[in-house]
Amino acid sequence: MNRKFLALTVGLVASLISTSLLAEEKIRVLIADGPQKAHKYLDTTPVLKQILNKLPRFEVDHSRSSVETCADGSYKPDFKKYDVVVMNEGFGAADWPEATQKAFEEYIAGGGGMVSIHAANNCWPKWSEYNKMTGLGGWGGRNEKSGPYLYIDAAGKIVRDTSKGTGGAHGPQHEYELVVRDQEHPIMKGLPATFKHGPDELYDKLRGPAENVTVLATAYSSKEQRGTGRHEPALMVISYGEGRIFHSILGHHVKQIQEGSFVTTFLRGTEWAATGKVTIPVPKDFPNQKFE
Ligand code: ZN
Image (cartoon, rainbow, N blue to C red; front, side, top):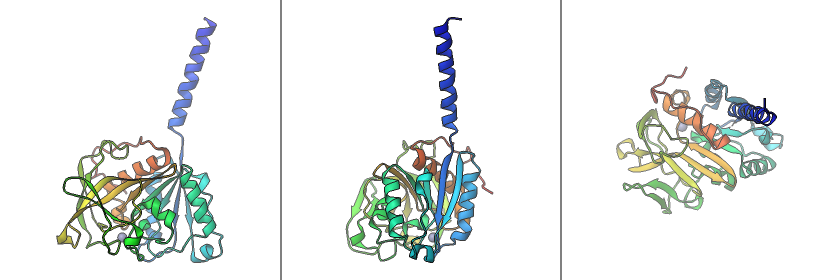
């Protein structure tokens, strides 16, 4: 065999092997939670872990803060070991130690990934960089000083509403429809243009810095359900420095987290936040696939 040809073939085979190895490279996920007031994180974190662990793509660790470890500064996960941090934090969560906040800001700005689940946009109204990462948040004294309300008008245009008022509300749990607003985004590609979710809480009147936010899907918050009569952002992506954030308002409790609509958008959003790409397919029976 011609030597040059042999070298070329060996080179080609080696590059094919490395490409396939790369495709199977593990995504290292850290789920962060801690004591909070309105949500049962002790029940939801194991389910989030179980959802991720069904795919060999993910390798999942967990880190739990406490009032004590936040106060004495010993809560300091090594964020740099992970490709993405899933925030299952919530209203009333203890403030992370200042050094941990700084380390997290550097980690995300340097290209880290974050996923904000449901009430993770409720905590830490005074941590300004965290609020830039979530883009929008609610409760905890949020008001016009936190940033504008963000919603989509009937013509499909984004409205930044700076009027005065509190941030964060929801009516009773009910089933609602998600309307995809960016069908070309990797997380949304292949999903139907509209799909059902719930019964779940539909967050509205969220407000925050709302910088570098792309709204992927909205849900109509109807007046009949004590809502705003606006198309509220339900799935978003935010960029923060080199970092990528996927923000989902879905998932009040275990039942909502196990819904097909949540599972698929959560898995794809986590992969995207970690790598910038999505390879996880949309199930054929989405969003009615069962998760147990
Ligand atoms: Zn909730």
